[in-house]
Image (tube, rainbow, N blue to C red; front, side, top):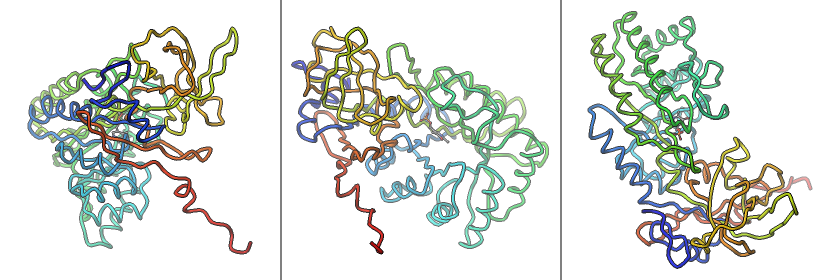
Length: 431
Ligand SMILES: *Cc1c(COP(=O)(O)O)cnc(C)c1O
């Protein structure tokens, strides 16, 4: 168990969170290595070792650091990046470029040069314009590259609108309209620079139901069949994206991977058998589900404000700057007072951040142990899209990240200093 309680303190992967807060200060992200590995082991057991010709690429944007890239390499996963910065991080972590897949709906020329020069395994192309750019870059560098086309399967996922990406009206992917899609496929097939491997979709995030993935997979498979009929060309790879949900608060369901993957593989294999298609390599790109539950954030409670008959606000020394998800899409979280972890929760408080925004509320109306200034508050399930979305709003420094395992702690990201926040700033010379 990653989470344990001893002597009234919350322990995370064997480490006393109160001691971690004293050693490293707060706010502090704490990531459990065993928590992350439990998910990669599940992926091995229920997917990679169970089926031939499958691959898992960790969607690094969920939590992208040097140590995380290294950990994913050690865990035998490929890596999905969506920017030059993520690609640079992976390369600096010595991640093998051929196991990197490059996604994104607006890659710059510089980013494509970087990716093709490093020799990334795949570029997931978001349209004709990008294909033209890739061809130009390949010609310049004298290289070829393997690509997939990201399609918009035109299926609305059952999740918050702001994290739904597969619907018809989306900035992501190529629409299914044959007059738009097929000319792109023809251009790729005719191209000297690229080898078209197949299609990619990613339909949204934090999904608890497998029906959207299944519906989208059907769309991709029908397209693969149509490509074979039209061009006598068999696609070799389909990427079904990520989006597998996790448990943030009680009532959320975190399905095991096999709940999504077994029916997806069964559907895929049945379709290929029925239509005499060679079953393509199937790739998935989980991000959140690998890291979210392995991470917690520690904050120190400061000002406590009682508004009689309304509510009590307890402020923390961070907030939307280290976790923007509540403000961005009303994401719900839960937590506890880490230094009073086995006390009865007799008080209801609203945990608020210190940034100058009314939406900077981390958890609304949460039952907690009786709170005092100086207490340590732990928020659960912050391992994904916390650190990676952190900002310097209000000039708050980006918190440190510590990786814990079996009672041992190791700093993997230092706390940003005030000097580092200003290192790229200067005054106009003419002053
Ligand atoms: C964000 C993203 C993912 C991962 O989504 P999760 O919900 O974190 O699993 C996978 N693929 C692409 C293309 C993405 O943009």
